[in-house]
Image 1 (cartoon, rainbow, N blue to C red):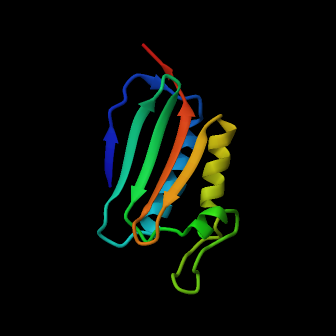
Image 2: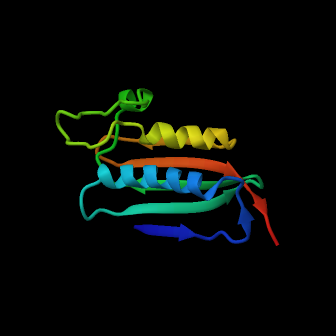
Length: 127
């Protein structure tokens, strides 16, 4: 896993537990749906003067537009083809926590080209 972090002295109003839950769910999905040995990247950056943006980028099998529009609780795609554990709540949990903290959540994906899960959270600079 590669983490690009060029951020210092910021404060995001979210509990450590909630932030860890978001990262855990999204990174776990990235590894679950990637081929063994491929890279998963986490990129952090500040956008405008309000939000920190975090992207989890994998080179996994990707999702179709149909799958992206159907992302929801208890939905697992192609379970008959790919063995998956769990009940399909990871993305929903992460998205709900992000929205509760005035953030934004987005998924971009193409079949065979991996997935980028991007979310933002408001931040403040600290001295």
